[in-house]
Length: 119
Image (cartoon, rainbow, N blue to C red; front, side):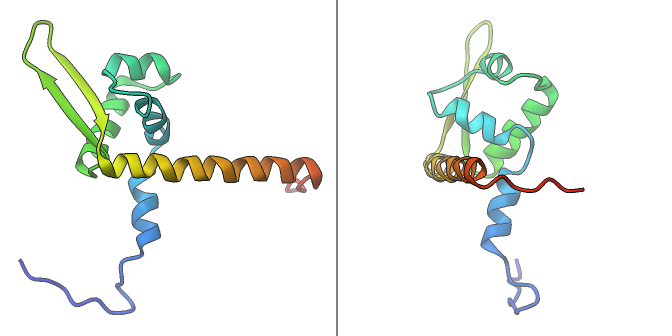
């Protein structure tokens, strides 16, 4: 496999990679849910309102590919599958808690100085 030389024009932006990895309507709610412990697909469906099973499976698979989740399949009847966070996923949780704290600051700021609505 040939390694490309990186120039200023085609340099990889770490922030863009991070945002693309967690983009998807249900990925952050999935991480919040799984932070409480291993989860089965049915638990995600009950815990995340309005998520479609097909979309949930797609996003779970993307998160496995991206190294955020681990999928464990059990050889039993009925078949059982559980998802858990990888070490990389646990680091993401830490970052999401910081983002949550930042959101609280934004809410407090909004109460002090209401933002203008567009229009």
